[in-house]
Length: 386
Image 1 (cartoon, helix red, strand yellow):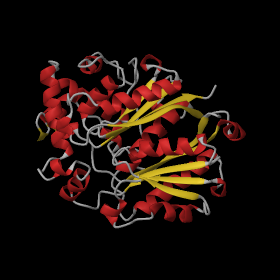
Image 2 (tube, one colour; image 1 turned 120 degrees about the vertical axis):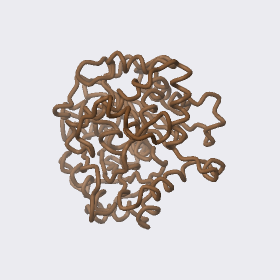
Image 3 (cartoon, one colour; image 1 turned 90 degrees about the vertical axis):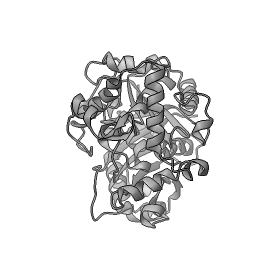
Image 4 (cartoon, helix red, strand yellow; image 1 turned 60 degrees about the vertical axis):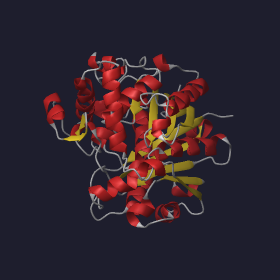
């Protein structure tokens, strides 16, 4: 079987996109991605759309069919991929499968969400619907899970509260150099630690924003990729896993088994290990999630991720493992279905040397996209073409 390559990528401006709807955002990223790769829309055989809530937010369904029409890719086969906030990563997995199986020689993946036109309370309620009915009916939200888990982590591992704040500081600093990020401004540790409490001990700057946006990747067999460019990335490992839907049934809430299992599968497929990864994009919807994913993926021992952050190991310019060079969900934004695809865009751009001022020295990169509070996870490993 041929290896699966990525030959194009694009991302819209993330943030508040007034007067535009999900179909507009999807078309913008899809067209830009095809132009980036130099591929005509007529050559697209499969088109996947990663999207969680177009129906709930806009009353709009059939977005994948509308996208094929809007970008001129008829008669491509279409599919909407919904795996809650891991929809983008699930889209990468699906696009990889479509090429790997031989069903398609050119697959376009576009992830997007339009959210900011609804109130914060409405948006929170829509997102909370990913929880189990037992939890949802009790009024539990994802921020409350984050606060409880952060408290457990800090107390169990004797971690300083400042270590979580330093995740936010780092990711905001990286976001300054991402022209598509929602928040392109630095914050200092004092601002983070003194911001309003949302779910104790987590405060406002420990959380990602509500975001509109879209991102896209173009997949093909490696032999086809060589017809278009010498600079491409190869998906060498990808896997997905689920954990208990009821969070309180987990043996240890500071361990995300979906991260552990999906990471194990991706490492096994790629033949790489944690020490071989040069750059990582992690799902920092809450700052505590960066710690949990670092540990679940083997970048730190359990309870020790905070030490790597304190030591500067995840810093972009000086660290051993630059993490969330894009700014992460924290600074870049989190348009649900787009986030996992945007993670892939960042890793692709790092591997082909197109990350601009965010560029690090990288031959292998990893992205981890989390659904709900670790209910489902997709981990993807990419390597630069040799």
